[in-house]
Length: 583
Image 1 (tube, rainbow, N blue to C red):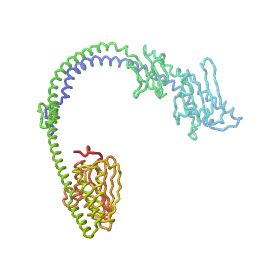
Image 2: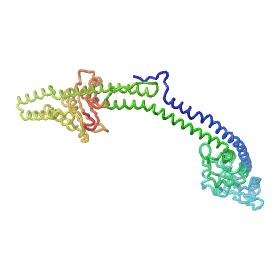
Image 3: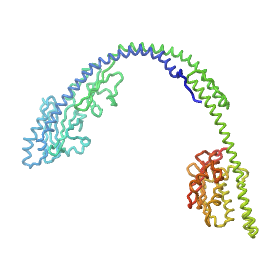
Image 4: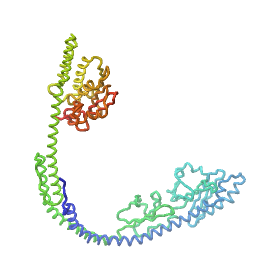
């Protein structure tokens, strides 16, 4: 019976949700949220707007300084004549003239940048160009202007150079060779041979960080504010006065982690690929919101008190219905499968009651089905016990004994009688229906010994047995019908060869009988295992049904056969002992 949902069905979760909304969320949202959030947002938005303008102006000033440095490098980068000179080959007497009249004037022009302490280094692949170094110690110029020319092989082994991925029209800002300690940073650009569009050297224009970030001043943002410059890799590059003693910002996907009591503003520095990060304390504009917060807390506490009283009343109501369910489940556990629950109301409890009633009905039906299945299983076992005393086999054996007596083959007759007695002693086995695989194989050996007395060497048998399978228990008399079937129906030549196998495969036990007999068509193989067939293959089908009834449809008998190539019959069942086989 399906669990229906009436049109007026209201889930209990909606009832509880409605109670919480009425008792708690409504006063908190209406009074607390409007007053608290509005005041905080208004103050933060006003402050943020003013501060963003100030931080944006600082970023623009930094970009202006960066543009000055970039223009200085551009004088070298875009000079095609200088590029050709640096690529050329010169005799010794030409080198001085080339250096003093064509190279140094261009470098001096590039390094003369206003309000910037610059160091220009040119690295060239062409070792024919002489190295040069100049340092201006003019006190008015601070540390003084420096410019130099080096061969590129001086830095080719440096890690910072190996990590560069410079291409045409690309520049990189990077701190190299101790610049992080010295408070400097370099603009790195390639020198291009414009005839071949290949890189022939490197421009390194180094400047002081304090010259670039001269306008980055936290005093412009108010007391307690902090300013950081984070590089492209989100590492600390520069900090304002006092900021270096604070915790360095840690990067995250949408910016940088910052203390909860600080407002954060991030301004990109496009020319460097860096970020200007400002932290401003929120305490200065949050005082008014604290009073609203206290009022909100009081309202929440009052709401919680009311909610506790109502929850207690509701718990009593639902506890009564739950106890009814528990009592019904206990009765079900004690075997009262005819127990049913009343189905009042239109909520989840009524659905549980209806589901319980359906489950109880299904359980009664399944018990009946299992009982019938066990009756069928017992009936099959009775058929097996009857087949153990196969009159046809016994008649043929006695006929053979009679023939031997007439021919005077006394010793052979005695041997057959002994084997026949042994065979029935094993098959009867004190009425046991569960035996070990080893005993089942002994039954087959005894049966084949009788047949070999009768047919002599015309029956050839090979045993391929894994002793690991011997201790496992199985149903009795499941292998002999396949051996008998091979002798009675598959034998068509002077001799028949049989292979008896027993082995462990994973957690299963596999028994096989293989013959080189006549074989079967695919249709015949299907009919042998078809329960609806009443003719051929009764003994084999009986074994298949017994195994399936005992262990499930995953186990049983399978047959592979081809006309003229013989047949392989396989019996598969799970390994184990009596616990797996059942009572």
